[in-house]
Every structure is written in structure tokens, then in C-alpha cells.
Length: 111
Length: 114
Image 1 (cartoon, rainbow over the protein chains, first blue to last red):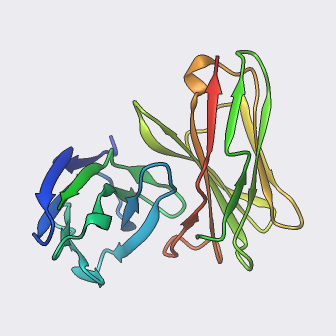
Image 2: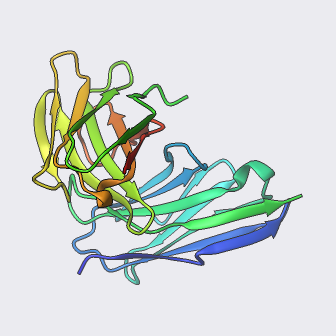
């Protein structure tokens, strides 16, 4: 069964610290993996899109990694800011035009 | 601001009723996607349209239907509503329908079934 699991479910860190969110998937075949940031009450915003051949992709302070062999991805946030408080959602496409969503990691950054 | 407009923002109705949710994509985007986000199931892909044609179907119920009009706006019709249909419904758009492109989401329509 195609599944996407994210960990941890929630995370609290202090402003300025780094953190890493995990995404493990059992989706096959693999097409691409996306990370989204979703603020409360808003629509998701795309952070990165990675294909099978890409290992790392950055978007400012956000860096996503992908290991297609172990079917794992991570999202690393550097020097966190209060505005990083949000849910982070991992989405894997098993084929073109299909999307399997993880349940997200809720991040809270404290001053 | 993503440039994707969804109306209405909130909708309250009763079981058995029918509602229509509307989405205007970003200027220049040809593809529209609909998603459902409920508390217990997270985000789920419902359906995608590209330039007026249906391109992909996800977990969309038979009671739900959608269409994309010549001006590229899209509507999601939900009928015979049940309590379990209460959720946030998001629309997203992209330039083309290709799988590798980023999707830009609206802020959703919150549907509450009483």
C-alpha cells in the first residue's frame, strides 16, 4: 500500500536552533517528492520538489534531502525563526498526476 | 498571496444538501487541482483539470464532481452532503499539468455540515 509517514508528529524548538523533519515512504513506483509548509488557516506553500535523481535541494534556510534507495527524505531548517512555526507536509507521487500526502509535522518555534 | 482565489471562504449547510465551491487559478495557469483536508485524514488529492479537460482522479467520491470552464476557473460540486464531508477544500493551480511543476494553493473553503 502506498503510504507516507512523517516524524515527529510535533516539535518545539527555540528560535535560532536547527531542526530536521523526517519523511519515510512506501510509494512505488516513485516519481517525485515535495515538501510543503502550511500555516494555520492557509493553503500549503511549496518548498521543494525532488525527482529520483536528486539528493539535495535547498530553498533559503530549508534544505531537503532524498535517499531513493531507502525511501527516506528529510527537511532541515537552519537558524529557525518564529515564522517557521507551521505544519510541514511531505507529498510523494507514485506516478504522474497522483499525490500521496503525509499527515505532517507540526513545528512550533519559541522566542 | 498565491494568486489563487477560492470562494466562499466559509460554507455552512445541512446533510443532504448540495454546494458549489469556486476556484480562480493564478493568471496564466492552465491546470487546476482540488484537495480535501480533514482532521482525521490529512490532505487528499481529489481531481485535476488541464485546460478544461480532466487529467487525473484521486480519491473523489461519486457524489462529488468538478469542471473547468473555458475561462479556466473551476468549480467543485458536492452533493448529498454527509457529516463526514466537513473539511477544508483547497484548490491549487500550476502553469501546465506536468507532474514536476510547483502547485500554488488558495486558502481554501471551510465546509461545515450540520
